[in-house]
Each structure stands twice: as structure tokens, then as C-alpha cells.
Image 1 (cartoon, rainbow, N blue to C red):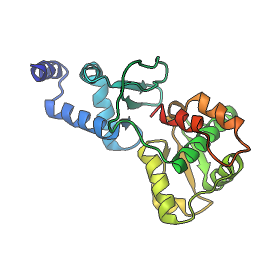
Image 2 (cartoon, helix red, strand yellow; image 1 turned 180 degrees about the vertical axis):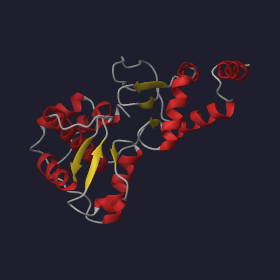
Image 3 (spheres, helix red, strand yellow; image 1 turned 135 degrees about the horizontal axis):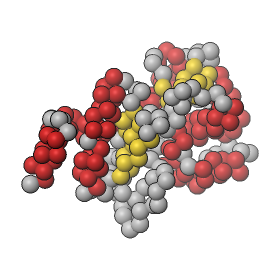
Image 4 (cartoon, rainbow, N blue to C red; image 1 turned 120 degrees about the vertical axis):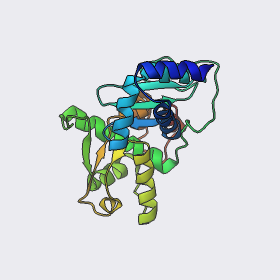
Length: 226
């Protein structure tokens, strides 16, 4: 049986079946594992490194692919048919499960601006040793207005919800919701933003900077990599 084969391989790597289950449940529930996010994710990421081949074989059965960035130490799962960084797009496959992220217009707008701000900091060399870029809320608000003619939600509850969503996607990092209330506060943009938003989406954004709406091709450029 498959479970017996997995157990045999896990035993050779000194990983319990329960530990493997915990890792897989986390991956399937979140679709993301980022070592620098928390102690829990650090533990699970390190565990993944020991059984990466087993995880990949297991997920290949249902057509789920893994993108592993070893430099910035994160893992992202991609459903069948998705565009994966550095890999050709799969053909003739369809998937509508929970791994395919549904993104709102407000989320798309902020994600696009985060990517442009990350690229700007990258060109200027303002990236820390873990690949993060520090961005002030004031700069983010200005960039959102200048690039897309948009503003952040006025209601603090909506603003928190928006940023919490992007933090859940591991695209940004901050510790307290109160950090979102002041223009003097800062967030960190995760290097994962580069693989989350493709270059075509950025090109489309540059071509539509005078528009007050986000064109469909720009939205697809974000959603297709999720």
C-alpha cells in the first residue's frame, strides 16, 4: 500500500508518519511554507528538506507542483494548469480547488504596487540579507495613488482585512495590526512577490498607468501564478 511505502521511506529519514502528516496538512491548508515567518514554519520547512522527494512524489499523484526557492527559503504549491516560475505551463489540465487563490480587485491593486516597489528597491540595492524590502505606509499610499489612482480602504477594518490577506499569502510581513494605522509605520515586502506577479503583468501595468481601472490582462497576470 502507498501508506506503507511512505512509512518505510520516512523511517529511513527518521521522520514519524505523524510528523509527515502535519507537514502535508500545513502545506495543503496554506499552500505556502516560509521559513522566516515563524518558529512553526521554520520547523516544518526544515522537516520538508529531509523528506522533499517523498512530498513531491506524493503530490505528483494529484498533479500538484512545488516551487522551492532555496535562496529565500520558501515553498509554494501550484495546482495543475498553473504557471510556475521557471517551468512550462501544463497543458490540458484544469483545477478549481482551494490551492487556486481568489484575489479581489483591491488585493490585485496592492499586490501590483508592492511588486513595483520591490523592483525599485531591488534596483537601488535596498534589500536585506533575507530578500525583504522595507516599505513605509506613506510610500505605499503614494505609489498606489500615482500608479493606479487608488487609495487604501478608508475604514480601518477593511484596511486590516486587506493587509491580513496579503500577509496570509506571505507577500508582506508585519507583526501588529496597529502598524497599519500610521503613515510612519513600516511593513516588509517578501521576495515571494517576484514569483507571485509575472513580468507581463508589470508590463501591462506600465502601459495602463493613465487608466483608473485595472485591465483584465493585469489581473490575470497576478492570478495565474497563484
